[in-house]
Image (cartoon, rainbow, N blue to C red; front, side):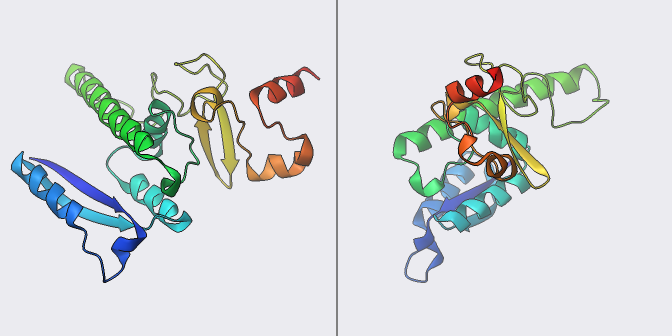
Length: 194
């Protein structure tokens, strides 16, 4: 039997005055098609909720950061997008991108497993959109995949596809460069030519 987790977003759902009827309805619908809901998570819609959502997705069975990055790339959303600022069309694109990406990779991984037992299990796979592809061309637009480094982690993204050409700052390098930090792809290219 298939199983699922429902992630409900909304600070109002964390108060005693509101009941999350949407998750109850969705659970009923999923059960009706043979999907067993194993867990429900509620996160607020502020910056702490975004942090909680990312932590929850990192623990999920969707492959953690590798798949999160592919969902966001496919939906053309910034890796730093805040859930509270997403508009309905953004949510619709993210939902469709998540369904399509998961469907594609489930089929692909099943086919690989049917051919032979996987020798090496890794989060870095050929064909991923941006995960593990720093400096390589974006499969959608051909621009180089950029990265944001923070602590011992990094996030890869395509500035043209995901941020409208804006180069995202990371803590260490942008602080070091200060006002010289490139804000756009054009400024980044000019800096590289110096």
